[in-house]
Image 1 (cartoon, rainbow, N blue to C red):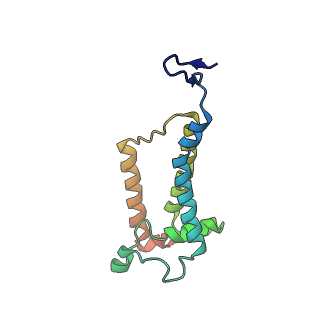
Image 2: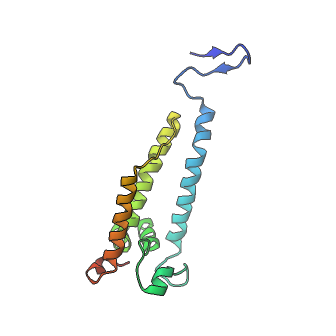
Image 3: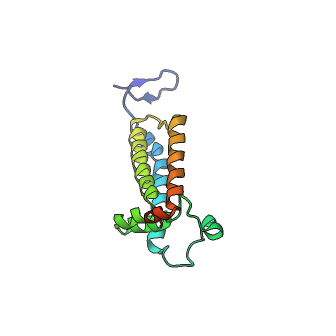
Length: 152
């Protein structure tokens, strides 16, 4: 059901319906983000991070010999692109979980955009502190002698 606005003589959409042009416009940003991520993964998939000289060295690893939480992330992405999930988890398990979280959040974002509803990401401070603590534990354990299985 459509109504006519008397002042502008424009047809307005019925409540609950979404004009087609506005859906495409709302998908521009999520589509751009996906294009950037796919481009980055395509580059990492094509340029092997296991070969020295292609990417900068992690400064923390270079100067201290300690693995940061991101060490092995590029090797992990390379393995994901090539379908080797075991190698991806071996290079950086946290990064693989991050890829999964990104995929879920991006999908929810697209669905909500199509529905005309905004994406609200408002994590509680306790969740953020918990994630920070998990990253800290991951970093500490991967740098201890018994955490060698977490080395990239």
